[in-house]
Amino acid sequence: MKKIHIIGLGLLGGSFGLALKKAKPEIKFTGFDLDPKNLEDALALGIIDEAKTELEEDIDVVVLATPANSLGDLLLSTLDQIGPKTLVIDFGSTKENLCKAVANHPKRAQYLAGHPIAGTEYSGPKAAKADLLDKKVFIICEMELTDVHLKGMAYDILEALNMKLRFMEAEEHDRHLAFVSHLSHVSSFMLGKTVLDKMEDEKNIFDMAGSGFASTVRLAKSSPAMWAPIMEENKKNMLEALSLYISNLSKFRDKIIADDYEGLSSEMQKINKIGDILDLGK
Amino acid sequence: MKKIHIIGLGLLGGSFGLALKKAKPEIKFTGFDLDPKNLEDALALGIIDEAKTELEEDIDVVVLATPANSLGDLLLSTLDQIGPKTLVIDFGSTKENLCKAVANHPKRAQYLAGHPIAGTEYSGPKAAKADLLDKKVFIICEMELTDVHLKGMAYDILEALNMKLRFMEAEEHDRHLAFVSHLSHVSSFMLGKTVLDKMEDEKNIFDMAGSGFASTVRLAKSSPAMWAPIMEENKKNMLEALSLYISNLSKFRDKIIADDYEGLSSEMQKINKIGDILDLGK
Image (tube, rainbow over all chains, first blue to last red; front, side, top):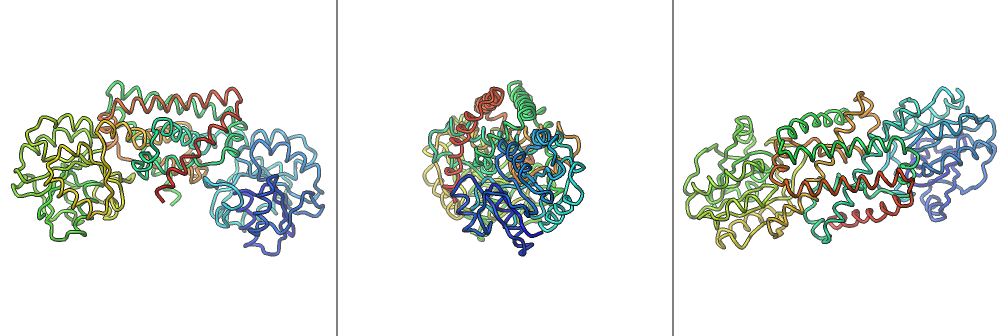
């Protein structure tokens, strides 16, 4: 592996570049970002060695790390341009539309549908960190549709990055992610909105907000340029997740109205279990 | 100040004892907890020096740190028992009902309505930490109703604990806390429930949950024995906060249904401001 090209030099694309450079210093990194400031920062930070708009014939891997709603067109045009030995991997948070869009492309076998489960509430190349992907899960969808040789190259990269592989269908991926990631962001954004709408005095918010509020609302700092497209791409599952969430909140409210605090307590007790599940990772 | 008695030796009562002992080693700490295991742990951990059920005449300060719905009766019976030079402080998360309950008590001036803005998702004396209260906000309600001399003793303690004082009316306190603390807990519990209901395979939850989900759902590990009573005591404000939250979530869902992703994006942009507000504290 000698040449890797990254399109989209934000938090994920940037962290990928920094980490792989460390692990495989022999590789030459080129890249591009529609935002000239991002491109400039990525060069200054050493995420890429050179800015390029055209894809050279001998690139080993092209990584697509742009917002979810841009990936469909970008993936198709990238496949159209690459030579026969190049692999294209995307890092998008949604996979179903993408896999459908590329299903009949003659170079489908040169594409690997990926999703690194990593991120922070910050964005852009300056937020990139060499250890962001370390020990994180990398989900691969429709793995059987990718060429065996090219897939081997992807495994080499992911091993060098110390990532843990998981395999699932694209539809399953999007449904689960709606619940386990995308819904968290909406719940956090709307919590932030509810508090901002109600409390005019910002000093009060800050003074009275314990660490609990800070951690629950943290994701409300996330980039709208990343998250609005995810809502768009995962519309069906987001609507289901949001409806169930709203229904659970309404039932909780009904229990307060009915003064059913024993019912509330026993429900909360059951949910406490989530702690054990998350602690599996520690 | 020579003698302090703590009723309720959980996370808050325990952390208070550990911290004040460090700052003022000359004080003797007695205390009580309805749960014999908590009492035993508090003694073993050195949170109190001696277990006592009766209040001695020469106690300087009695601290009440039991669940919110138990504080009303406990406060009244404690005031009934104390001598004329004892101060009673409570650490409850709600203040309005408590201040009303005590309004006509002949020893009202011996009570200080307090609320330390500190906590974790864990509970019990074993979760107590000597630095939990350090640099945190301590809200005092109806401060003008407490005897000046006794109030001075409270300020001594809070200064020794390195806490920052804020003053507000009880009604205002409960309304603000509903939004900035109590609602976070409900949003987190219901997020946990929505995910648990939907995903039967716990391994999948853990694998696919990024750090975003973990931080948003963290409060769902909190103690129902503490939080159901808070819902009860702050019923009116919780219903308002929950209704606004549900309404904001429903409007967000409507924007997805209408494919109004520009609208979503500009709304999220406005909410990003919460990051600046919370960063005030750093």
